[in-house]
Image (cartoon, rainbow, N blue to C red):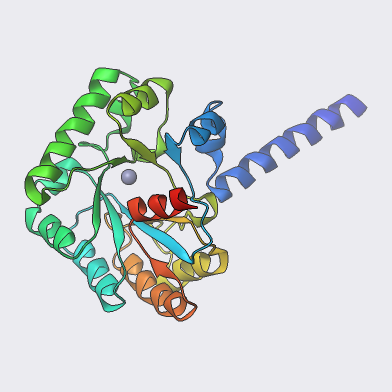
Length: 250
Ligand SMILES: [Zn+2]
């Protein structure tokens, strides 16, 4: 009987920790045993150490013909720069949006060609290479920017992927755990998303947002709210590569 209770208690605790990890968005990340090593070698970046009040807003899964321009309008209003992790097969359909991003000083980064989890979980270096190179070529052709950051779909990581990234002299752009805004979740309002970010803000953070998710214009609304509040607090919004450079200087 005692054993039975102990087992149940353990199972209960285990489930609790799992749910807690999920709610902090750390589950995938904490799982990979090499994560700390990769962070130390700066192959994977989750945050930058800087004394300056600077952060990087990052937007995944676009470009989207409606949501991306809405986000860009909000950024422009506050002279804020950001990094867009574009999906290759969407980028090639929206060259004008990419051109505008580059023109406005934003960084355009690589988020794979297909955004297919099954492609990535196959863990085949030749598939990773094709996904990354094809998207890099699309970005470079449209914007003349050569992307230096790659963010794997769903945060997928493996030794094969990290080795390839190292060979291609790229960096895996992760995000700061506390700044997984969950803006993609349908029903999360712009105010809720912005408040989460404002509450957790610290210099050097990489903030995870989506301009290509299915939650309407809530992300653009959140950007408007958080930029208004945080620019008044003295925060600067720079591209992720600029933020990394700030960290290297200190
Ligand atoms: Zn994505």
